Image (cartoon, rainbow, N blue to C red; front, side):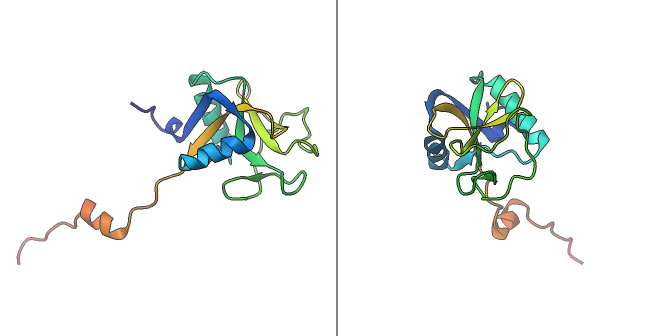
Length: 147
């Protein structure tokens, strides 16, 4: 059976390392995206799941500054990264490194050359909200007794 939430949000791929772009394409092909980490809680969740999965020491995540150096965005929405966990010694401004990985040991991020091959973390997209007709079928309104 799948692990309990929140960990079933992520799938860690350790068998075949891929470049950041190959990893992104693989995640998209499976209906997801590279893992996004908007909060400290989500960072802890992904880190814990990577440990459980027996991940390698580093995994690609869905952060990039490929469009504008030093302006980091999430690949799924193109939203600016407002919460981050960059390694203290790493200034994520390197003109040859536009993709981010997470260090599994401590959950810190570092920018890296996108062409390097690493294991990666895909994130499942949440299922679409049920259509209102489906809601009616799933939970019919109670019948009132006749007057």
